[in-house]
Structure formats: C-alpha cells, structure tokens
Image (tube, rainbow, N blue to C red; front, side, top):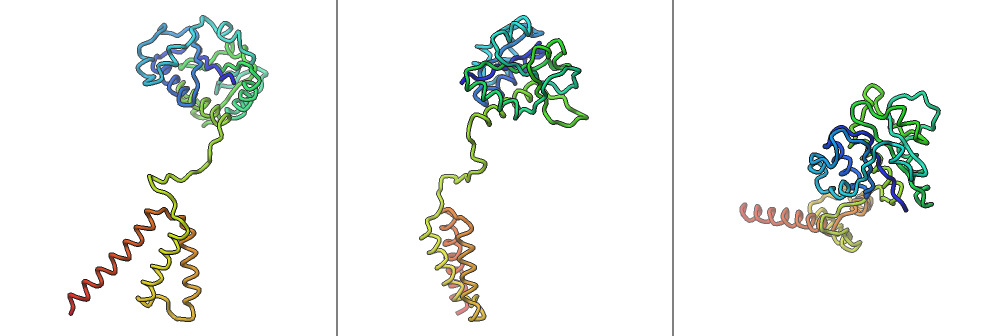
Length: 248
C-alpha cells in the first residue's frame, strides 16, 4: 500500500515544516514534498522542530511548483477552510482518507496539498486538485496551523488503515482477578460482616449477600485490588482486636 504524499505548498516557517514532519511520523507517514519554501531548503529550524522525525525531512522532495510536485499522483486533495468558487467535491478528512486508503490499496498514488501559513492555498493551486478537504471547525475561527492540519490528516489515515480498539483497560503491571479469587474475597467480606451483624434482619440476609456478590463480580477487580480489599479487612480486624485488648 502506497502511503499518501503530504505536499507543503510554499511553507513560510521552518518550524511549521518540522511540526508537520512530526505529525506525519506520529502516524507512520514519511512521504513529504515541499514546494518553493520561502526560506529555502534545507531549513535548520525545521530540523530542530522535527525532534526525532528528521528522517521525514531527510527524504523530503523539493519542487519548484505544484504541477511538478503532483505529476506522478493519480488523485490529489487540497486542504482548505476558505470558500472556493470552484466546482469540486468537498469532503471531511474522514471521507477523504477513506478514499485514499481504497486508492492506495489499488497501488494508486495520492497527494494532499497543504497551503502556506498566511492565507492557505490559492485557487491557482486548488485547481490542480480533484477534491477539497475541509475540516468542520468553528466558522468564526477556521484557520488551522500547518502542523495541526497535517496531524488531523495523519490521524484519519491511520484510523482508516489500522484497527484500533475503542477502549482498553490499562492494568499497570497486574491482571484481572480469577473468578475463584473474587469468590474468596466475597466469602471474606461476608464472614466479617456476619460477625459485625451487618446482615439484618435475618430474612433479608440472602438477598443482601446476593447483591454483594453481584457487586464484586461487576467491578472487574484486578488481583492487586482483591489483595487490597483483603488487607483492609485484616487491618480493621487487627485494629479492633487491639482496641479490645486496650479496654481489658
């Protein structure tokens, strides 16, 4: 699968080029192309800002204009927040990257144009694109930094190409308790609560115990948490014994 090329058109600040490189590598993208950068190339400020993503800059292609930068592309997107008087499909990043993934899987080359920081892409740039990508942002403040825009596109690309579990449990060097561990914990608590007279009146005790058992299993406790609850009971029991001895 050929990853999309991120094409930075007339970028003005080296720091933003470096930020875009970091954003790309965060999501496994390495194909950067730079069109007519204001401060020349290579740019030491871009390298400093890339901070670990220097390899993206090392292999970045330098081009004099947009047509040259996209001449090997089968399909080109232009990122812009401004209204254009051009008849083109306008897509969300999600839809655009869905299309990009499908085309890349067929061996096609996709380019994504990003405009300069001051005013974005000009219509003379956008006319070279097959479609426009617009992020649904606050219409009263729609401008995105170059690095931010690259980050959004990179995120959507990876989301479309990798299966990410929506939610996982961070177990912090432990593991979920076994069923038998939870059962023993429930037994321990029931025993201590029986001694304390908690299950009252007696006729309600079975339902109270059942509800507590259900609570323990619903909590999805880790082994460390089970041991903590055992320790709480042991400490309470020890403290009560100490207090009883002091009163004798």
